Length: 236
Image: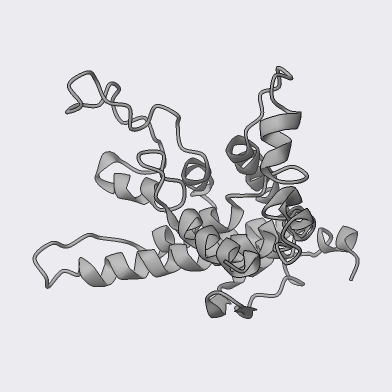
């Protein structure tokens, strides 16, 4: 099927079943229908043609993995993290955290769509080509914008409504591209400079903003996936 026909699906024609992806890093990955619907859009399919490590394949010939498979891996690890948090903080262990099914799916979708905004040759595009051009461009910011446009498609919106996520678009965008000063502390390093500024969830759910794109210390599921994936395809 040509990519330009993927966007013409009506809600009734959308595949509403989960699918299993075979991944060399994580094995079999089962993703829910909403993730599959997003993967089937032209915007996401575009990631098949963007190499994760840009021109590194000219030195390491096997480094030809793409943002497409990396994004699926990040989505999977986001799900693993949410399930681990649910198990470790169940109501019977003394440190309960209430995580809803909708929140789990939101974090998974954010992980899946985190790299939608990358340009050709990945970081070479934003760090070299776009640098000093006076353009208001960051991969994260562009990813959030593209995700919002994807959600406007009737087929995608119908699946979002089915999963009760049609009101969570703002939250998912914040997970993809958190506010830049979200974790900025004052001179004492004990208090945050600004009040909680996210609209999707309150400060009691601030930990959700550390899973997909951790702007506090940089340790997130995207790093976990690309460290394993890059090493595998580089042969190191």
